[in-house]
Image (cartoon, rainbow, N blue to C red; front, top):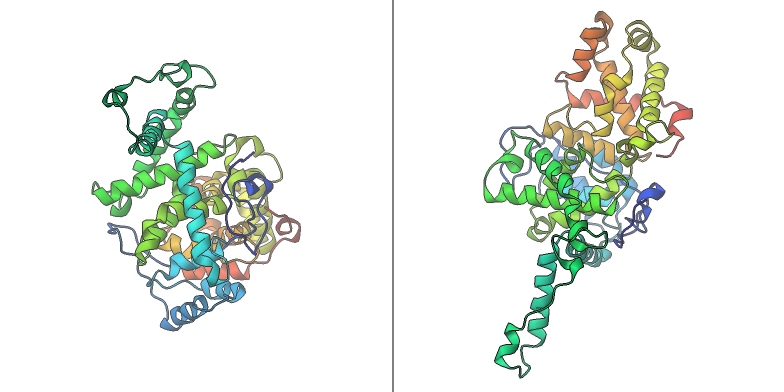
Length: 414
């Protein structure tokens, strides 16, 4: 389903679903770290603060300074939250997502190769035919620069084939293929305008904020073009936002300058765990969103049957009424941006995969508001769960770690 020339560094974790294997050739797993934050108007270049013990940051810094990094230890440290500073979060997320290999000696080459391939993909898929032709002509002019050409030669008129004409509607026309994505581009632009409107990094009218939007637009459009059966689905912008923000605020200038390329590669890896939830044709399949919602129901029943009975049997409050957004958007809409970064640290650092920890956290969220749910009826509980209240994130994550898994559900590889 997914076709791409992009070959990214090998990973050492869980295998990717076959649909994304061609897009991220040679990849195998993923993970991430921890952080905190708050909404409001964060400026570009400033990463959000987290209030964590200094010792944890020192341990994490020491671990990623090793010649060969112990990923299991890094996961353990990251699950408790990654302190901000020195590009720590950006580097660790790249490691846990498998974008950077454990061996530091390979980092420079892997990053260089991946960034060059992204640049080539942009040239192949995102340039308009006229811009592509202009650049090609520039190369030809440069190559002929030193030739003894007649002065009139530079004014020669070049024939334009029918297929190269913007009004050509043929299937093989480069312009037809280009205009095919007009609606998708418009949808992406609308969604990016709504992405974290209270955070200046995403929504301000400054040149930096506009550049951020343009980079995110490139990533989402390229993903859509490389995945013709899925394309772009509303909500993908919310999944991209934390990755792009973290990589753009890396204090290493070379890394922050390449945030777009790095974000694309890591976005692809992250989407491999949840891409089936965006594919309507798979909704009723074992890997579709309905199956995942059923697993959440099973998980709640196994850990608190009383609450499960009250919600699903008595009040008929089924997971599809409130958890669809939780799961498809990886909880990006239920908490503040800063809290989301902290949650993602735990999601991405889970040894059993993102979906395992995601369902644990969703179940923990229900347990944390059990008293209010037990007192409510259908309408009360729907309102509560669709507008989840502010709650201490560390409490949710502690409960999530203690959730008893359902063997039949969690043995399934997503």
